[in-house]
Image 1 (cartoon, rainbow, N blue to C red):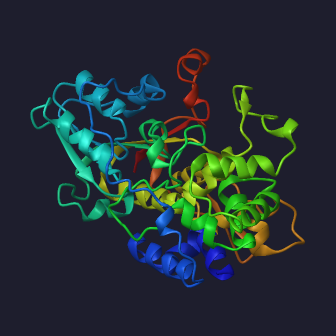
Image 2 (image 1 turned 45 degrees about the vertical axis):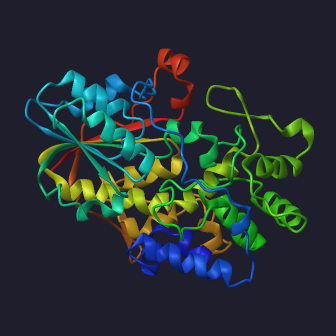
Length: 397
């Protein structure tokens, strides 16, 4: 299990386990149950999700004006929204540009159902697609070089966070699930499977790598102790376990980017969500798919919400060697051992290290802006969930 976890942490080596996410999750699942543990009875089914309501107001998308400016959509173009979510960006695009076609992809069956309902209002201009980023190339509706504009809004959608039964939010009690695919792949481990079956060191490596959690060892120790008494199957149960490993004065001592109190379990939930959904590998697969599907001169806009995502996108767009991404990964100390200072050996954008020398790599992208765009004060006041958002945009060469 130790070797498995360390391989999963590394973006470059995870692909060696399997190129298909279903195979990867299947193998992990077998390792989990090899311990003889069984927690399936603790889960509540997510197959009975709340009905979709077409009239329900869509969540306000992050940096909408900035996104539309970067996309620069022209008449007759084909737009690929790789993360439909609640449909905010897609609906605005369809309402703003009367003769464009939008292909709306999402791995979440609930989002796909919402896209199907919305498609009825736009007379064939919206084509819903169900699948992960890694499955996009297999979609018959999309051909290489057939797309003019791609929008990728990474991470967890507000719709998922707001549904307690999906298990993403620590502020709403629900089953500890966190699977973005819902029940599409029944054998995919839930977050409860991870916290109840992995050993302490493996849990700590996940929290450190995907949550950048400084107190990963302390938290993983508390989880292992708590589950020995009772399996951890609910979101607020896990939040309480994490909180219990800190002094009461420290529970909200952390601050978010708006200087608001942040619960000490926030990074733990982020790490588990990323691990359960294989988000870093999926993001990389999505960027590769965009590169294949976009025509030369096509535009890509990517919204990220934490530093792991942004570093991956930055490296990809600059033509950096993705196989060496783990050199800057927060879990590098686990794989490379002691003796090297954090940040040492980092290469500049557009360079890779080969045989001790730095060599320029060839990028398929030309940046449309310098650095990243972040939300303004007015938007943050209206939509605080976008506080961590970063927008990068590039032109397909």
